[in-house]
Image (cartoon, rainbow, N blue to C red):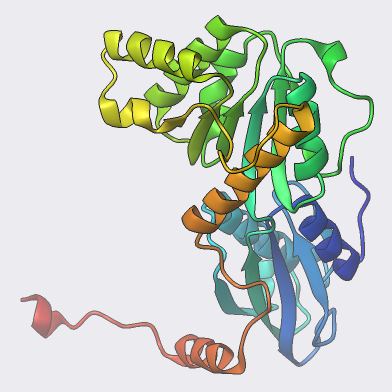
Length: 292
């Protein structure tokens, strides 16, 4: 289990790993409260770092932050919490907090295969703020040490795991087995949830796969969504690292084109004032005269 960090260490760690997170800041307090203004904590999908006071207040905020992360909601929210009996914290004061969602990395990458090209690709992409899942059915094919943003996924059923792993990710298929490549392509097209699909191979392999997929009933649009040969054609060379450079360049371009990621520079004063006004507005109530 990852150790708990100070909030600023956690932010740096999430940015390095490309992991989405919510930064929680105590904006203001009244009365008796467990922590002072400007106290912060960081919430990820599995961890929380630092504290804004503990207790049920913190539990509620962590749960809310994780709901936002699960929904990939990286916007801002301000909320007030009276520390009364409902929160089990009878301090008598109240706390206003700001929750800032951060998408973390520049993209998510799913790599099938742990051969020479894949190892070179991981070397490059492991230096970038992407969340990477690396899949192979051969446990001894993975290197002993991996970059902090890479998660090893050893499985005897890559095809069966593909749809769940590919959700929202850019997929690159670099396996040693053409039939496995084909089965992965079919599964990913059926799922339809990948951000993109790239397949290593020659023009001959690409033509053969097109024919086989068309014979299976896939549309031209579906087949055209698979980039084969994967990588940028303007990057020459056939050495594993050269091929990996061309794939990396293509992935960076795709991420720029397809990712609408919020700025990671924090919340502007004008946006904060808007949130404060929205938070101060009373909730609308029903009018019986309008309902009749």
